[in-house]
Image (cartoon, rainbow, N blue to C red):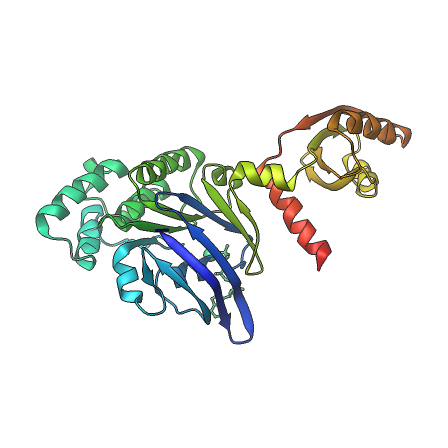
Length: 314
Ligand SMILES: Nc1ncnc2c1ncn2[C@@H]1O[C@H](COP(=O)(O)OP(=O)(O)OP(=O)(O)O)[C@@H](O)[C@H]1O
Ligand SMILES: [Mg+2]
């Protein structure tokens, strides 16, 4: 059985379609990344899958329970960490854990065990009496994750859990996510950090409520940048950008700081030949090419390519 099964899920707010007929499955224990620009429908999808709001049409099951017909059962099978961590600032670390224990109806002995676990995983054992408002964002985040999985749910939904968190805390947080997944918990996570998306087993990219790409990070790179990608350092990045936009060997070009990334089109026969041709093309137009070489695309490259393709298709 899949942990999550989604069929033709749609959510409209009045005439506006926030989630547009999406379908996908998530396997048990998978770390599943849900990506997309602001307003693309990520939180709305999560709120439907958590049984908080009903879909306009379509259906989904979460741990075998229908979000349409059994939203209360859905709620007892999941943990949810909302985009604004749902901690109570005027309660201490320990009181927050007790509060969630009460919501989930966890019996006293088990709650004590689970509390020790949360304190340890969040590194807050010594600070159990501290008001959670006084914690740094990184600690708040780990405490919020601990509270979301206090009752050991089969599936945990994390809505942008790493917003505003520094890189070290983010790494530690992802270690916790991997530990949960290794124990069989399904993790459904949204993020704007594409380097984090690399840690997901599979990802979906949403654009205006529709799925525009899905697969493992490796699959997406191979399928979407199928003819390879070149990186160039030049004396005139913008001039080169404009020239390359019209060059038939190139499908898509993006500016990365003082370099360009260019995906090759079907007309390019191999990256090596293409890089020689492009170098002489740019130099014949008066641009100095300091460096040009083939690179393995990042997920950022993949997404820029996907979104821009969407743009030109419409
Ligand atoms: N209750 C609501 N009523 C009307 N429109 C809504 C409602 N909730 C969300 N929307 C709209 O639906 C769209 C999708 O919103 P959603 O919060 O799902 O996006 P998101 O992908 O989570 O964005 P972000 O990355 O900014 O968190 C947005 O245009 C938003 O304004
Ligand atoms: Mg959101």
